[in-house]
Length: 378
Image 1 (cartoon, rainbow, N blue to C red):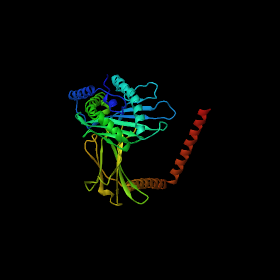
Image 2 (image 1 turned 90 degrees about the vertical axis):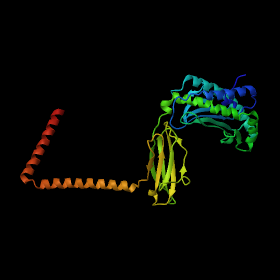
Image 3 (image 1 turned 180 degrees about the vertical axis):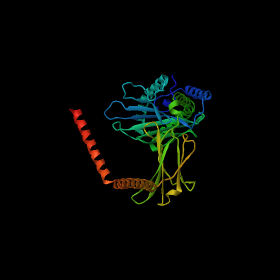
Image 4 (image 1 turned 135 degrees about the vertical axis):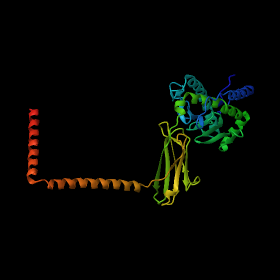
């Protein structure tokens, strides 16, 4: 009997019974693996490895569709689609080595069959017929500190986009998202799978994350500082909001905080989660409402490992920029007027005879130029 990878064992396995001795061996070996991990270097910031699986039923088709995506620091590095002709994991980064690719392909092919079983089983908890469109998803992975040691792990399941089950890594208890998930929670507890998830996340998951970071360090361990801008917005009701937006930064971890006279305004802030920008960088903003006229009391503080020190930005009223532009334009107009007046005065001071001479000479030059042009054309 073979030992199945913890990412597969921990899924919604319905009819697979494994030898308890083999489970214990897998757990012990994983802990040993954790003990022998070699931390090659110290990295800036925390890092994460995530596996996102999705199974979707499709009425009228014989088989459900299964997809999986592997993320390192929220960057897609591998993907798999059961509908693809190759039926293999597709690398999304040039530094992905072939053994990673092959290993993940085997895991994804096994997970395809098991997730199809899982979707059928979970659907029965909700009394859903086989003819409807339903999805079953999981997100699992681990994070490490800057020195490469384990920070936290997570295992979450969702059905039709709603929370189904999650593992509490502190208590090793399964948390049911709704009444329909209670039966599955009991099944997982009877199988004692929580501690094997713990062993996998603290051991093998950390090991592979370190491998990915080591091979893709030129891409994954770079630092791009954020470009930050503070803007002012007025709603139709006249409410004033300042928005501090950071974009173009990597890695994703960043802190945006609004300060009023130096004091943090955490409870009043509206934050969006850090989002991929589509070009390998990230973006995020923090907004704060206030009374009109008090904008200059607020400062946005930005902290990111790509910055040598925190940034502090205030909203700059557009009127100051407009005023500056108006002053520049006025100065240029005055200069132009002075030049025109100077030319007029100069021409008035020229004697009439010389002015006529200049005019005749200019006309002769123009005529000669025309003759030359005609000769050239001939």
